[in-house]
Length: 262
Image 1: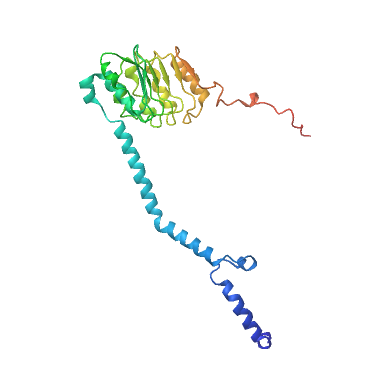
Image 2 (image 1 turned 120 degrees about the horizontal axis):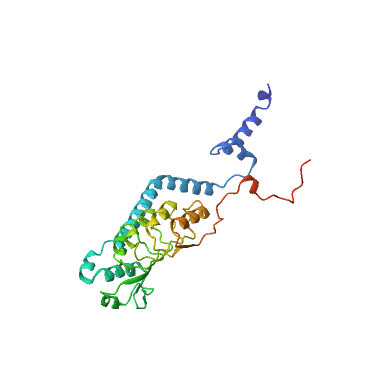
């Protein structure tokens, strides 16, 4: 009966509400501000674009990654032909310099590339002079590239700080330098873990080892203790021996400021 008496008025109210319900995702829109139609169109356009191109973005990321890896492999190609022409010392030095690192021949000054990657060609004259120190910090040396580095049989000091591609497998290949290597820095290498450090047991002539800032090492303090036992004549630096060690319940510090429960 209410519909018969107020029929015209009810029909008018339904006509006013109906446009508000169309195109909305919930009744809560009725109680709040109405989103402008232009913004709705922009949201739909962006969502549609992301939906249509999501797989294309993934493919692009994969392509860029493979391209970057190809560049890394190209930088780490073998220079055996240089070894035959100029000897192992010059070939190994050329590899490090092309990577952006620095080399020091025995009784010579350090040779470093400039900001454009250019370096003096005088090292080609040092065919018979051993390389005694290499600074390969921030270089993109990987497992394959070590073939060129291991040509330097009389290397005494090696810095691999912050090398992004130096991992545990790379450290397992350093044993040919066991007779000569005395200083090694692995500080900041993100892919070096306890497993790789355990491979350094061959390097018994090491006198200094820097293992600071290794994010893949889960327990730095305990790792330092184990490395020191493994290399008793080596000074292991860069880690606080107590870092990462867990205290027993009886050794936990007590909070004297907190009230004693009744």
